[in-house]
Length: 411
Image 1 (spheres, helix red, strand yellow):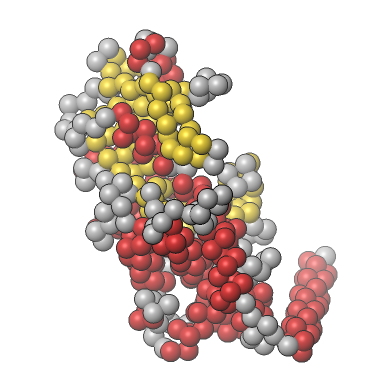
Image 2 (spheres, rainbow, N blue to C red):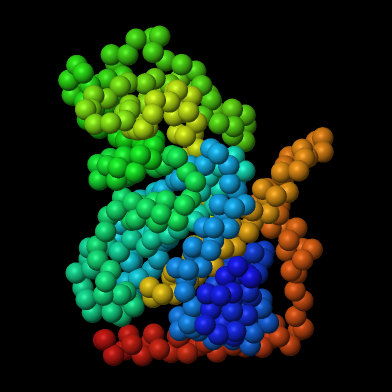
């Protein structure tokens, strides 16, 4: 908290910001303004709502502090920047950025809010270091709706790959030491993102679809068509990294891409040794690198999924109940800060020595449990709990009355 203290204009919001971060690190079953305020001992959520909406502090500057903290704590020579999006299912139409769209969280088209994240991943750990809210075209074309949600006039429509390029650029401009970028098909199929990375001479291993067109010295082919022409000797068995059940072994093959521009470009193909399922990656590096390095980068992409899982499950990344642009950025930034603390503490505990025989290394889940139990566990009197019960019921009664009145007026 000392790292971000200078980002607050007044001492009151700086002190108040500590309480929701501790609440996000707690074992509360639900984490929103109501539960975090009750956990902090406040009489109502008004103070926390003020912190998220009207108080003067710079969430983007705090994001930069988080990035510096994560890089400092998790720094390693094999660092990879990973981009991916995640969605939060939402009701209604007033929450900023919400519309019916596909989200991997639900696995279908759903009324949801989608954001793109950038994660910093090394052997020591991984954590999110940047975020961009995806604002659909349906929002950008409705100025009144954007104003109601507090979206700045300077915000226009940007695709997810464009948001990813923006975050990667910010990280590299800030001096983040990373030589590789990884991402899924949404980003691998975008030529503008690939060109931007190549201009910076930053290597990438980006997934592409099976129908992605690949130009070789023999002509232009679909990625899956090229695989059928590969001889048996082209495949090598390599590990994509250690998983929960051991090393993840696949068969891998590499095909050169014909291109007159500087650098080395390849199509990397992964084949499941049991099912034969294929996956394709478009690769670039300024200097020639061995297949094992490309495989290692491709295998690192899954760590952003773990970042989402732990960020949501442990730090309340997706449990916000805020509607406006500023509030969303502030909530997500504080959640990223809480998760970055867990990632750094886990890396620090793992670094000195191996765990005793019969024990796995400490995880973010276990660090959170120990931190909550031994350091931050709070105990409030019965009167505090009863006062909050009365506050919730009164607020819900007002909301119910308002809904019935609105329904009657519409009828």
